[in-house]
Amino acid sequence: MLRAWRRRHPEVAITLHELAVMDEALRLIESDEVDVAVLPDPPSDRFQVTAIAEEEIVLAAPASHPLAQRASVRIQDLNGAPLVHYTAHNRLGAWLDQSLARAGVHPEVVMRTSVTATAPQLAAAGLGIAVCPVSAVSAGFPGVIRPFSPRWTRQLMAVTSANTDPLVARFIAGLRRRGSRVPHSVQTQLDESAVVAGE
Image 1 (cartoon, rainbow, N blue to C red):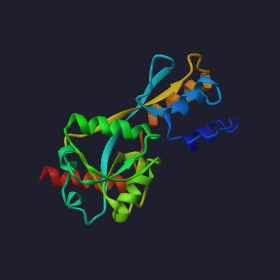
Image 2: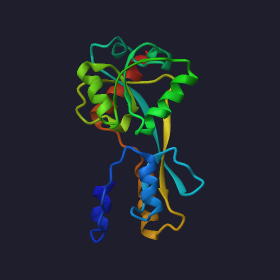
Image 3: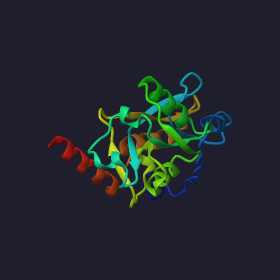
């Protein structure tokens, strides 16, 4: 999306802020330091919020882990499993805690990271398993990715101030058209899991 936007609008400077703390991103929107933030489940009472994509939540594991041998996993399969979790600064941690508590699941937290994309890498290195958005899994991921059954997703939203600039509105429209992209090698693992599950 950024590459296509840059080609069409070379006169527009883009600055990317990668933050793990939602409150910090919302503060930047409120202070007009940034034009748009892409966040899961932001508060809608103070901001203009636009759904841009549905993102799948997946399991990342080392190839040697028993859950990696399955075509898909259930949230209940995480009970007692060694989990690479997220720090309190990363809202994914609270969201995951709530989801696991609703299911009555209690994994064993073996370590925490504030960076979402680090969790699957630590899992692939054999430190446990990770539950993460598929967008956090990079191309050439050295571990195993498995979908959840039933499918587990979350909404990604574009957050802006109440007075959205027309250029920002076009950018958000582009995000909606593109959706959440998954690296080919990661999508191949998910597709192969779906084929095996369907047999």
